[in-house]
Image (cartoon, rainbow, N blue to C red; front, side):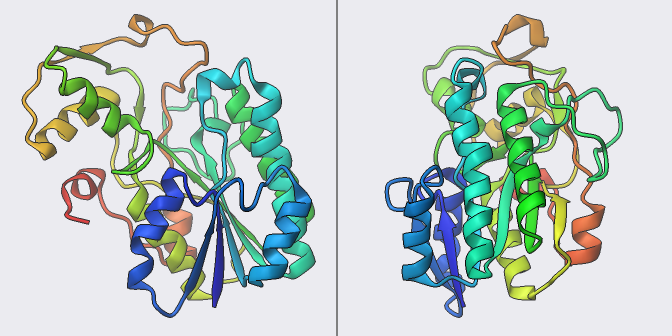
Length: 279
């Protein structure tokens, strides 16, 4: 079985690559944006024709939430029209598509975990571009698993955990918002879930939510990161208004995982356990 991973140099792509050795029965092929550019359908067609994949994981994304507000054309080119290109090429080659999406398709005003049938209402360019990517896939190719995730972190790429550890290394007190609620997603747990879906051979196509279990604030997440890594640093909770940002952050972005557990048999660890686990 051949699985083509687009966006192979990003955080999710690196996490999948890290686990590849544990799945010798799967030929995982990783392509970065130079080797397979989602904004260039000819580039994608070349990669698909060469690798002949059975599955494609589209981890290619523009994820700079604030920059997207002033770089909307780039964000939509990658997240929306890029996803459309991938879906089109998957359809041409009869390849099952696993698309990584985001909690930012919602506005964060709900007070209960978001289910897949909740109405999207993105408040940022990033969220709007990712939602449009979902819509293009839904319109163009039925063999898809759209996986919405939240608060992705790991030892790879650029993410909240690595930023916190970098700041702690400066030896100065750290302020972290405590009024934004969500659930961290360990990139290695996401990678295991994606590979598990592929190995299951399921045809229960559609939109799914995935993150680790439990809820927390960014402040409590940061505190637990320092606890897990044995880092001594002063952390102070502050409100969102303390850190004005160009793009609006969702106040509540907990995702309900009932569907992915029941229909696809995905097992999900608590976020604290995932953070402390020796992966």
